Length: 155
Image (cartoon, rainbow, N blue to C red; front, side):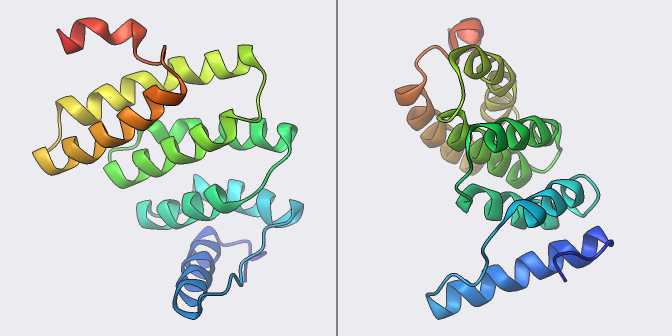
């Protein structure tokens, strides 16, 4: 079902495998190159909750540097999504795979991550702001310059 041409089927299969893995305590969802390609293709074509499941699956994947760059490139558009869960899942994936990239690539993604993070803090309910701030704290510890162009927001 992961190789189905319908992105909704792929997203639902990912959700089912994630739930089975979580309830059994064993990981039944292993991503290989072909599966990775299918997940990245389905990412832009499924519902917002399907996107969250796919992004969560991608966050568990161990990629090499070229796969990490490809994943980040394909996930960046999700930072503009209206659903906060999609944005936070996309941030998680990008931050995870930035560790496998070169400095100039990291700088490129840092510039793309900052505005959505500020938006999460400025235009969401307090509960979401709290979660966003906790995540921002962790991200700033690893990438201290991530919000350097957003200083006026914090003043």
